[in-house]
Image (cartoon, rainbow, N blue to C red; front, top):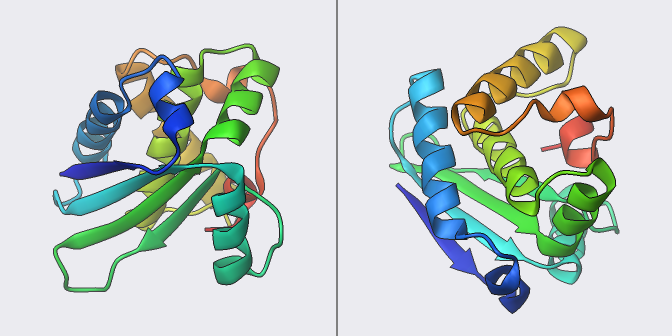
Length: 159
C-alpha cells in the first residue's frame, strides 16, 4: 500500500491524480520486482522542503527531485519517498514530456531504491534503468532515457 501525503498545494493543481498515479506505480513496481507489498509513504512537497531534507540527510544544500528513505529491516514499512513539485515540473518541461509521466518516473525510481536497487556502478545503473523502462512502459509512459541523459543527483547516484 502507498499512502500519498500532499504537503504542497501546488500538487493539487498539477493536473494529475497523484494518489491514483502513485498506486499504479506501486502496484506495477511490486509486480515487476516481486517484492513484498509493504507500506510506503509518498510525500508530495516543494523545493524548499526537498532542499531541507537533502541537506539534513545527504549533506547537500540544494533541492533535488526525489529522495528515498528505506524503512527499518523487519518492519512492515518499506520506507518513504519525497518528490519536489517545482523540480518535477521543470524537468518535465525541459524533457518535453507530461508532468504526470515525469512524476511516475520519479515514483518508480524511488520505489526501486526502497527495494534495494541503486545505480552506484554502471552495471547496477543499467539494471535499474531497464527495470524503470519496463515498469513505466506497463504504465503507458515512454522510455524516459530515450529523450535525454538528464539525471538529477538522486538518479545519478544518491539515495
